[in-house]
Length: 243
Image (cartoon, rainbow, N blue to C red; front, side, top):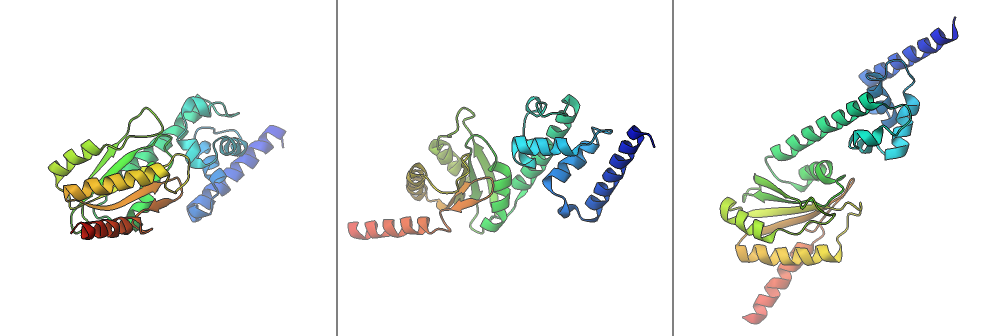
């Protein structure tokens, strides 16, 4: 057999096996294999395994690859404009699907929103502040997003929240923001912001149900950690002393 034909046959068999593996058990594929499989459709006659590994080495994960700009991806050896655009388009589709699930959520629970928040905000490079407005039964009335689009830190939109309270009239609100540094723990500024929001909500007659910090793989809930209950007890003690 001619050497070129032999290589082509090997690649063809490998592609067939990988496609069958995906069809039979898609969860068994590694991130490198999934990227390799995607590249089959834009690089028809080339071994895409080294390209997939190169992408993961450069951008860390399949999510990092799919959310990178096409001009950045083209720096990886073996990847051209067409294949880079294809990968980014897949990322955009995934983003749209994630957004639709997030905004379509009808009832709030931490278990439900944990994954939705991570998918929506976990990998953003800039901080985004989001408010989830709830009825007394926990039904989601509206989700409102705030972003400065200027820096890595977004200013807490207290005035905007007050205006939303007047229009939407929620029973409770969940506040969330992401930490681009990947650390799912509150900073001193986060704690100050939580205290400030707690008092603002209390004066507005709105329950401050939770403040959630979001990273690419985890969340931190002030409610689950008991911090909001502590503020409530502290306020009750203070009011008792005044009386």
